[in-house]
Length: 290
Length: 333
Image (tube, rainbow over all chains, first blue to last red; front, side, top):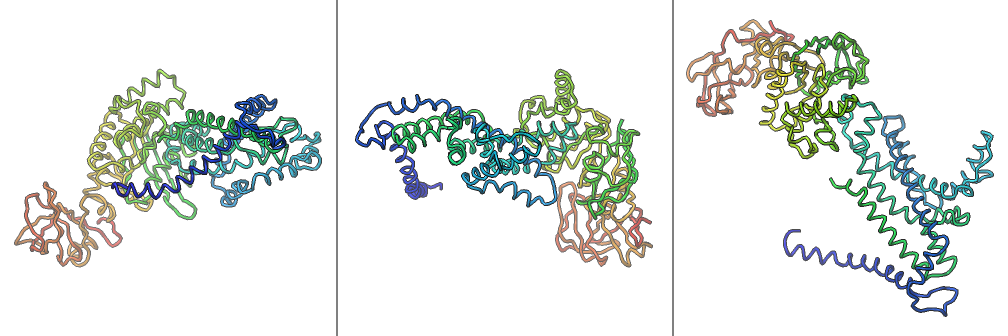
C-alpha cells in the first residue's frame, strides 16, 4: 500500500463498503431527526406538520424522564460493578490449576450463549417467582418470608439478571489478561515481601487495567441499550421504577403511539450515549495507550 | 551474613527426579556460580534456595537457621530474574522502592535508600522513567537495584545476562563483579555460559543432570577436572578428548588435552594431521586439525600471526605434563 496507484486502487475498492455503511447509518438517523420535529401520532394521523421542539419538551418533561435517566445509569453502573469485580474474582479462581478445568471454563462461559429474553424469563420464573421460585424455596428453608424480587427490587433484580449474562464476557477477557502476566513478576514481588493481597493490588490489578478498560467500554455500549430483559420481567414497573431511557422510548412509540416524541427520545438517547462515550474515553481511555 | 548450607536437598516433579539429594556449603561473602548445560537443574536449585519451589527432601540452612519451610520473603535473600521481572507500570524509583514499601519503611527512608542504590548503579538520571523506556542494560541495573536496597544476606542471579548483547554482557559481568567487591555479600549466580563462570566466580559448582560434578575455584576446575564432563565443560574451546590406542599409550582409557597445550610445527611433531577450518580471532587462531589418526578432529590454539591454510599438513605436539588422564568410568586418574 505504498505506491500512488495502489493507494488509489485501495480507496476505490473500499468505497462501496464505506458508502453502504454510511447510508446504513445516515438514513435511520436522518429519519429519526426528521420525525422528532414532526407532529406524528399514530392515533391522530390527520394532525401532522412541523412542530419545532415540542416533541423534545414533551419527552423531557414526561414524569418518568429523569427517573429513566437515573435508572439507566444505575443499571449500567451496577452491572459494570458486578461484572468487573465478579469477573476478576472468577478469573482468579479459574486461573488456578484445578481438576476439570476445561469443563469449568465452558460452564462459566455458557450464560453468554443464552439469548437475553430467555435468560430473563428463566430468572423470572425459575428463581424470582415469589411462590414457587428457587429463591423463595431457599428463603422458606431458612424460615424467612419469601422476597418478591421483581416487585420489591425491580431494578436490582434486572441488574442481577444482566450481570449474570455479562459476567462470562468480563471473565473471559480478564482471564486472558491474567494469563499474560509473567510469572517472574509475581515471583519477584513474592521475593520482595509482598503477601498475596498486595501482589494482587500492586502487580495483578495494574496489569489488568487495560483489560478492565476494554470490558467497561464494550459493556457500556451494549448496556445502554438493554431492553428485552425489562420487557419480559417488569415491563418498566412497578410504576416506572425500572423504566430506562430505552424502555421509555419504546413506551412512547408502541404503547402511546406517539412516534414523534419517541423519535425525540431516540435522539436524546443518542446524545446521552455520546456524552457517556466521551466521558468514558477521558476517564479510562488512556489505559489503552501502549 | 550469608552462609547457606544445603544438606540432602532433593527435588522431584511428579515422577521425574530433577535434583537427587545433594550437599553444598556456601560461605559468607562468596561468589558462587552454578554452571551446567541447559536442563541440568541449576535454575531449579536456585529457586529451591530462594524458596520459590518446595524441596521434596533435605534441609536448607541460611545463617544457621533452618529455612526449608520459610517463605521466600522471610529468607532475607534477593533475586535478579532472567527477564528482569520489573513492574512495567511503575517508575524506576517505585520499582526499586517496592521491597522497602512492602517492608513498611517510612517514605523518607525509602527515598534515601533508593537514591543511594541509584548512585551505585548510575541510575540517578533514570529514576522517573518507566522500565519500558530503558535499554536492556539499564533494566538489568534496575533489577539489581531492587535487589540491593533490601540489603539481603545473599543475592541470587538467574542467568541475568542472557538477554543482553555480547558487548553489554562483558560490561555487566564486570559491573556485577565490581558490585560484589564493594558489597562483599554472598552471591549465587546461575549461568550456562562457562566464560561467565570462569571470570566471575570464587567458587564454581558444575552441575549435570541435577548432580554436582565438581566444586572448586575456576583454576582448580581448569587445571584438574575431576571427570570427563567437567573437563569438556570448562574451558573454551573445549578440551580435546582422545580415546583408543593413543590413550592406552598413556595408561588411560581417555586422555584430554586443551587446545592451548598443543604446539604446532610445520615439519615435525608427535601427531600428524591436515588443517581444516581455521578461526582467526586476531590474538589467537584456532585450527581444527583433521585426519590425525586419533579418532577425532583436534582443536589447536596458535598465535594470531600463524598462517596455515585449509589442507596444509601440520605436526602437533602436546605438552606432556598438561595431559589429563581418565579411566573407563570417566574419572580422573
